[in-house]
Length: 197
Image (tube, rainbow, N blue to C red):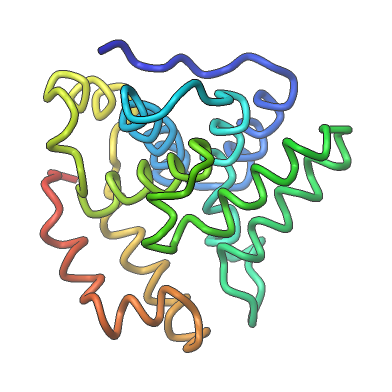
């Protein structure tokens, strides 16, 4: 199974540039792995998907985890979805693309999003969860997983996401991530993920 290439549209390039400008290298690599794993997990499961929409949403899905882009009250996934929508609208993206990217980012923390009928929305969730806690990695060929990790090294990502999510859960006790801390032992899942950071 070959890796899905990064789309080369002006909007995709702009999203990747914003990702690189705003985020530390470990988060950049996570967003790239989210795209790769998400696209691979869609293979054979759903029909064709919009690679541009998936890439943009994956690239920007954690933008509001960065303190400069965070909001003190709004959950990071909701605030980030609005930031991404504003960025795309400013660049003249069609409304359907803006809506798809916004929803993919806003919903990526919800467990039920894995079953969203829109493949791009489901894939951001699937790819992010695969990269954070290793869920469904066993459904992918080991050589594909190894190639993704080689191209986009983790660079201490587990420690980064633990710190960032702890900050979010503490500051926003009514958020989805706070509920995952309380009911799903989120930090234990991160620690048990099959990665060597």
